[in-house]
Amino acid sequence: ARQYCYKNYLVLNESKSYQLIFTPNPNHHQGLPEITTVKSSKYLGIIIDNNLTWEPHLEQLRKKLNTGIFVIRRMKQISNIKTAMTAYYSLFELHLRYGLIVWGGTSATLLQRILIIQKRAVRTLKGLSVRDTCRDAFKELKILTVASLYILETILYTVKSGQARLGDQHNY
Image (cartoon, rainbow, N blue to C red; front, side):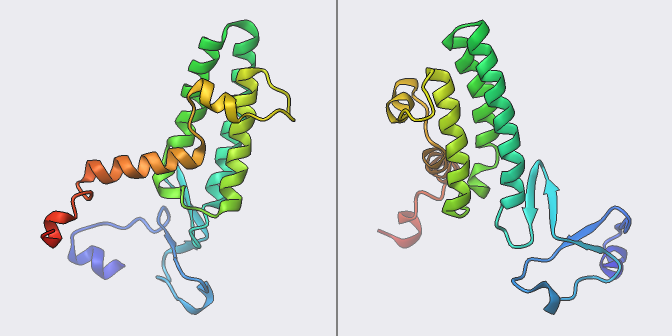
């Protein structure tokens, strides 16, 4: 690392730099000895772990979403559904969508935990009990589930980046 930085006229601050080694077995891979190795690191608000399970990030996201539900509940008590919906989009779905295209392909188990919290938010908005189904509530409120949001974000990214036109590359 020192040689690379020296050749490219860069200065490496070893006390502030970390390395994240992506490998199934980190014991067999040696990183740079002068840089501290970590199991996870936060980059632009997304926690990346060395196995790319996204579990640390989703744990942090669950806490943010639960805080959002609390605010939605309070807004619904002191105001109307329109204000509560504004709180949902600004304090819940905003956090849910941030980086979704990156972490949305995580395991079904971890994604299910996020969906359960999202269902709780929808039940709060509609005033449903824990045992009531919220399938119709999603439709009435025009809210997409986390899996549907992931599909939407992936399609939008593909179209926006120009990758949707593979016919030009293959001449058909």
